[in-house]
Length: 445
Image (tube, rainbow, N blue to C red; front, top):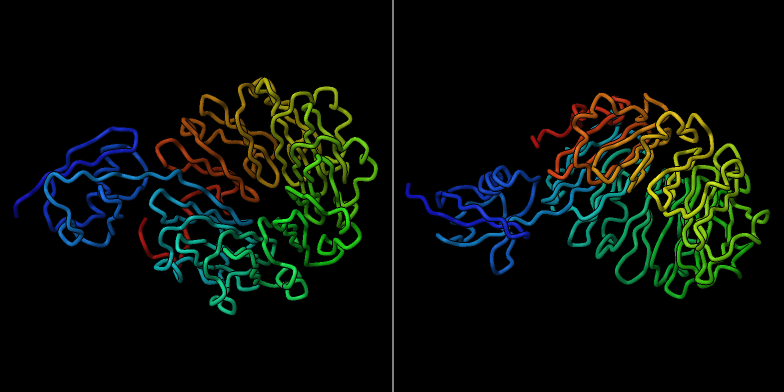
């Protein structure tokens, strides 16, 4: 069978010439190009913008000798439920690893539907994937939102998905909202008429809060855990961002002030620091406390002191703060000079003294429930606190080079490298070992 040459190029300008036959599967050409470029998965696109179907042959796609094809690479992304990771690869396909519920449908039950995945959100034990056509595919424990069959016909033209512990909420293109799963957060019927022109949704453990186009907020779910914002409803105007702890919400308004509601012990009452909450630029939350970064780079905290709600011991050091991240009970702040300061429960990452001299030139921090991982400018990683849940990356340190981003689950971390490959560490039972694949997934990746 005669062969022909095609040229495959990357967006950056690199190119390779590959000799193939007309009956060569697109998937084979795609894999060859990925190997030659040393990249992760991508899509082959013609000069006219058509995406080649990997299941078809070159001739079926109308590729001619001398054609120029582009290998389109999308930065892989990772989502995590409590015990499971899902990676969205460059071609929109996915891989999963970690602990899988034996009584719940695994990814194998929906694998053939997962094409061109744009985003994935996770409840405690279920996943929801948003596809490029605006449809949604779910799997996992039905009691945690893994079964969306009752609302499947409504899940069209979905723009965004968010997840609480047991439920999901989807924003449609028309600004309306569809919810499913179990618990109070899945029941939005009482506020359905108010859920119009919704722009953003944020989730606490058992409640949701939605920001509408006019800057007002609608909340629903367990009333005492953030689902009832009626006490502060008249203050919830001109809201631009909402953050959630486990059982409370904090709304950041356009004027830099903050409004809170929900369980007071989890940060639902900021009255003790209300006067200090001026010119707030960002808010981050642990499970039981909030930390607000002000315009001058200082930090104001409130909520449970054992969850990071009291930063008074290092307040003088919290200057020029650029970003804050949180485990369940501690916070870590990146300063302008690339160093890090931590506070909160020491066993949850609030004490970084063992690695303080390594925390230089930090560009990003991610958290599992119990540990922190810092990504440095040179692409290396520094971790601290509970070793069994991701606080010790020594077993994979040599692999952690050219790291682009990090994602944490409850007890593990996964890092995406520049090559598109993934490295995981932490508790092997819940995602720290990539060898633990979903037994229902019979498709080799």
